[in-house]
Amino acid sequence: MIEIQDLTFIYKDEKKPALQDIRLTIPEGGFLGVIGPAGAGKTTLARAVSGMIPHHYTGDYYGSVTVNGMDTVETSLEDISRLVGMVFQDVDSQIISPVVEDELLYGLENFGIPREEIPQRIDEALQKVGIADLRERAVGSLSGGQRQKVAIASIIALRPRILVLDEPTGELDPRSSRQVFSLLKELNEEQRITVIIIEQKIMLLCEFARQLAVLSEGKIVRQGDTRDVLAHAEELEALGVNCPRVTTLSRAVSVKTGEEQPVCLNLDEAEAMVRRLIS
Ligand SMILES: Nc1ncnc2c1ncn2[C@@H]1O[C@H](COP(=O)(O)OP(=O)(O)OP(=O)(O)O)[C@@H](O)[C@H]1O
Ligand SMILES: [Mg+2]
Image (cartoon, rainbow, N blue to C red):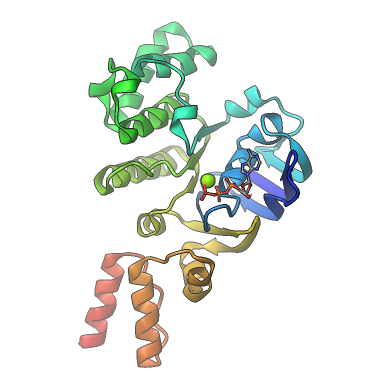
């Protein structure tokens, strides 16, 4: 479980808090989507959960973040990283090895994973992300999307209990993006791995995330079950957060018919609504 209590953080030499009075609880096995406009503090929140704040990024820090009972201020970054794996928004600052396989190997060796276990871990992670064929490729020869998949595979190979992903599909096409979400769903459902994902592809996110947190100017302006948060579509749009078109559709139908429609989260639900209306 992750518990964030009254967290306020101001980066060193900055005046404005990047995060302010954040209160958020993410249960073990949760699947949380984080949304909000540019500069809202999404990445900063990810850094706070993964311990990079305050260990790597310093500044004024108030409140607390505890991960499975460990206060991130009092726990070393190494210990936190055994529990929390993070895929950076900027994958190129994450990948340090020149060859794909070595990138996975590096992390596993660093974690002291027994030698005999390593090849299987690498195989499995590459396969899960669908890049077994890239194993011996030079990282420099890969596309942005492929590098994003390498970063995801290298974190998954470490088998963290909590996964924090900062816009992991930014460079991926719709099909690969869906594959990433399907993998996260599998890890979440079969191994109860907690997933926290920052994502711009709102339709995809809302299909998979059970909970949403909406950030704006460093504050959480709304949090709760995905459907409940999306019921406030106008508020989100006003903040500059797009809502899935199926959600906009169910809102529009509610307004037009004067009859409150349940918020639609995916195409199947939208289709069912339309069928109900025309029958
Ligand atoms: N390393 C840093 N040093 C100083 N200020 C920073 C640093 N990183 C982020 N900030 C500032 O903190 C605020 C929140 O930034 P953050 O990157 O968390 O937002 P974001 O929601 O992830 O934005 P984006 O959608 O562009 O990724 C911004 O005002 C940003 O300029
Ligand atoms: Mg960001």
